Image (tube, rainbow, N blue to C red; front, top):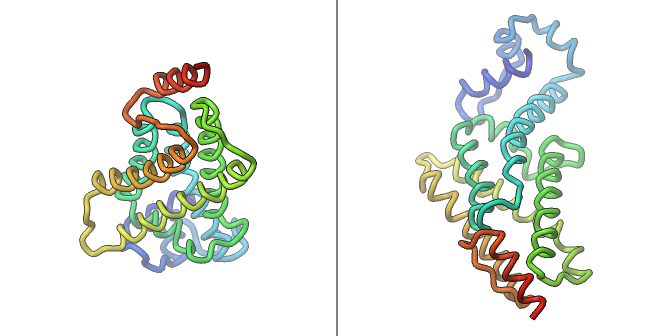
Length: 216
């Protein structure tokens, strides 16, 4: 109830507004003292709200982390889900990532970014193996930090976009351009390892072609 009330207050307020505890308590129908029985201090309350917001976003992203469709569709599906959520909830996005410049270990944002990074890193390694892309020990060791960089790029880029007085380009165009940027990086690394991948081909066809090529 308290966290739902906090989300309601944040959504109704201009982006980056300082939310008063009294506003949340009033929305929840509680007194300030009663609210603080559930949290040690304001920082504890803020962390709980950030976690609540990010859990909702992760709940939308996680089902998209699957090898289904074309490679281009997989990337676009993930990016579009994130951009569309942020576009619909700019105040929640800002509240959740406002400490992104100084992400501390154990923070809700760090935890969520690590979760996404781990999921995407696993998907990328499995995809590389299925496509017969050779990854040496250095490649495997670099997957996680490189994917973390892509996640950070998306978060920072969307935050800057949301902060514009006039949100241009539109969400669909931003999703496309961000998806293209991620694909170019993946494609470049694949080509450097001798793999030419068609982003418009169904993943099943790409895997079959890679398998047949490895047997030739």
